[in-house]
Amino acid sequence: MIGAGVRVFRAGRASLLFRPRVVLVCLILIAVGGLIAVMLLGTGSLPLSPAQVVAGLTGHADDPIVTRVLQRIRLPRVLTAAMVGAALGMAGAVFQSLSRNALGSPDIIGFTTGAATGAIAQIILFNAGAFHVAMAAILSGLVTACVVLLLSRRGVQGGGYRLILVGIGIGAILTGINNMIMVMGNLDRAMSAQIWLAGSLNARSWSHVWPALTGLAVFAPMIVLNARRLHMLELGEEMARQLGLRIGRTRLILVLAAVGLTSVATASAGPIAFIALAGPQIARRLTRAPAPPLVSGALTGAVLLLIADLSSQRAPFDLVLPIGVMTGFAGGLYLIWLLVVANPTGGRS
Image 1 (tube, rainbow, N blue to C red):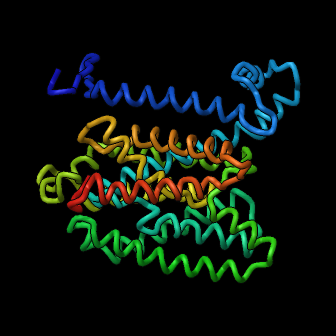
Image 2 (cartoon, helix red, strand yellow; image 1 turned 60 degrees about the vertical axis):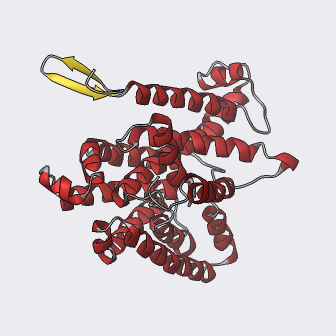
């Protein structure tokens, strides 16, 4: 044991530091996510028991319809929800750490809206498919991030408040542009884009799963490999510079990777509020670790989005609610609680 709550694992000349509480929380989150996923796979117009779900996923169901429903309709939806939630949770942890502010999530500072701009343009103007929508969302999200960072570069050094304010302003401008693009399209495409803007997991297919999986496979390792440098940045730029950290290069890599995760998530399910904001904060409170909650934040984000999807499908009065409505409602309540109850002085959570 090196310190309170810290353990070290050695194998020859290699060593690994870890916190048992963080590992335990991550394992619990994986178990909870798996349980909710099974419940989601059994939810719908064709109710299925957990045994039927397992049999259908393995191809041993008595009724071939069960296998087709699970493998072609419900499983892509659940996988998309899990990966989108994980991407948003990890991206939120990065932005909150870089800005050193609990409000520094991509949906608040305009990056989600920027990613939505490219996706809406593809849907309205070109009637594009899932792949082209995803590529446009990533590109527009990166452009938005560059603009926000250039306009707020002094603020990044001052604690991140200027970053948040500039991001809110850019997000408001992009919202107006998105509405203008919506007016330019015909009624059918506008309705399709409006449903997408609400954030939805309906009609998710494997064409939505692969972009989300690719985004996680490309961008998540970039963030995890720079986790120690991100923790050093949380100590302040002066301290990080004294420790030999190349601040500009590290921040650029982390921002690009986090924006990539946000853009892919937005392209796969539309703008999803609350997850990137609350996931890292909840994970930090559960793990009680000083380091940025990257993996635990991703797992928390996945669990939150799965819970929101389950709640939307089992809403009372047979309501069919888009996933973005559920997360937006919960996110508003959480934001009020975060600002008024958990952090009334306005400092960092």
